[in-house]
Each structure stands twice: as structure tokens, then as C-alpha cells.
Length: 238
Ligand SMILES: Nc1ncnc2c1ncn2[C@@H]1O[C@H](COP(=O)(O)OP(=O)(O)O)[C@@H](O)[C@H]1O
Ligand SMILES: [Mg+2]
Figure 1: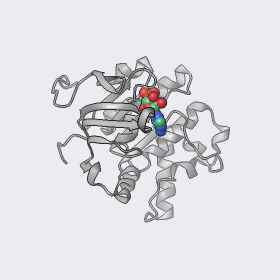
Figure 2 (figure 1 turned 120 degrees about the horizontal axis):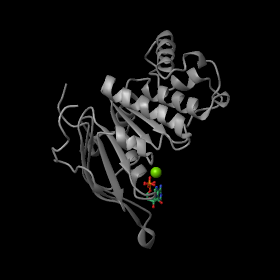
Figure 3 (figure 1 turned 90 degrees about the vertical axis):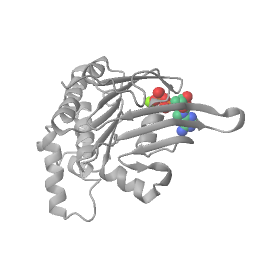
């Protein structure tokens, strides 16, 4: 077990477009996230939150600076290695759920299954993941039969299927009513406290900021509030 931070960002930069149409979306973001952290990433729309999350998750590439996640320096990580890291160690939850409607809940949850795993084990683990989010009886239903909150729980079960060390969530309660959103938030808190999963959550939800151990605010592609890399002031043990 390593004491190395789960996420280490140094002066990360990202632009979109070319020439006069260039938009600088990240302007030197530095951040260190130790294992077991629960971070809320807040800030106005367009401030670069999703871009940052996607870069951390290896879904998008930085143009400058260093990105190191779970011991992998992304500059020297090959695409297949990155794909494996995303599949096995990083879970993603998005606002839009991103479920496949032609598959059952179990089919969606077991999508990240390794082909090496036996089919029985995949089904058992898929069932277990659905059970964890309270949808054990929904394995053979289709997403179209579920409420928004249930769909998001299926998406969370899919993200947890491979027992990731890091869970990245982009406005996971954005499409949920507040009661359902609070259930999801509570689930994230438990996941962090009981299972020690490191979470980084982009959110507008005030409640999320109250369960987060750290709140980081972004503005115009920079962190303007919250701990910067190297800042040890994360408070004492709970
Ligand atoms: N693929 C893209 N191509 C061009 N511009 C993009 C792309 N993704 C994001 N942007 C721009 O980057 C800025 C930050 O976007 P984003 O990271 O989505 O912000 P947030 O999640 O904080 O709302 C916005 O101005 C957005 O228009
Ligand atoms: Mg966004």
C-alpha cells in the first residue's frame, strides 16, 4: 500500500481550438489528492470542472503540465494501459447516467467486466453491485422502466463493478430531484467512509459540500479556493 497521492496535478493546461478561436480552459491547475479523500469541485458553468475531471480520468489529454493518477504518469502511459486503468481502477458517474437502453440493469452493470472473468462470476458480481445500491431486484429490468434516481444508482453500480480506487463523478445529482439526490450523496459518503474509495465530485449541490472533506472552487480554468498541492492543512482525524 503506497502513501503516494491518488491524484497529482502540476500546472495542468488545456486549450480547445486553434489560432484566434483558441479557448484556454485550464490555466495551470495544481492539486494533490491523498487516498481516501472526498473532494467537491465547484464553480460556475464553463470554469473547466468537467475538463479537469476528464483529464484526471484519462478521457481527455492535457496540453501541458503533469498528470499522475494512481501511480501512472499520463505522459508515459500508453493508450492500452490507460484504458486498463480506466476500466479497472477508476469509476465514472455522469449527470446523464449514460446507460444503454437495450440492455438490462445487470447487462449495464457488468459492461466493464473483464473478458478473463468467468461468466458466473460476472453475474454474481453484477448482482452484488446492484445489491449494494439497493437494486438487487432490478437485475432483469430495462433502464427505461426505472426512475431517474434508480437509473443513477445503476450507473453507480456499474462504476463500482470493478471496485475502483477512484470514483470520478460529474454532476451526479444534476438530473435528480433533491430527495433522490440526497440519497445518492449519502451513498457516496458511505462509500468514502466505509470502503475508503477516493471521490472527486463535480457538483452544484450545497449538501455535497457539507459531506466533502475538501471543497475546491474553480474559476476561469484555475483553482481559486481550496487546498493547492503541498498544502498539508487537511484537518485532524474525524
Ligand atoms: N470538446 C470541447 N471543445 C471545445 N471547447 C470545449 C470542449 N469542452 C469544453 N470546452 C469549453 O471549455 C470550457 C470549460 O468547459 P467545462 O470543462 O465543460 O466547464 P464546466 O464543467 O465547469 O462547466 C467551456 O468554455 C467550454 O465551452
Ligand atoms: Mg461540466
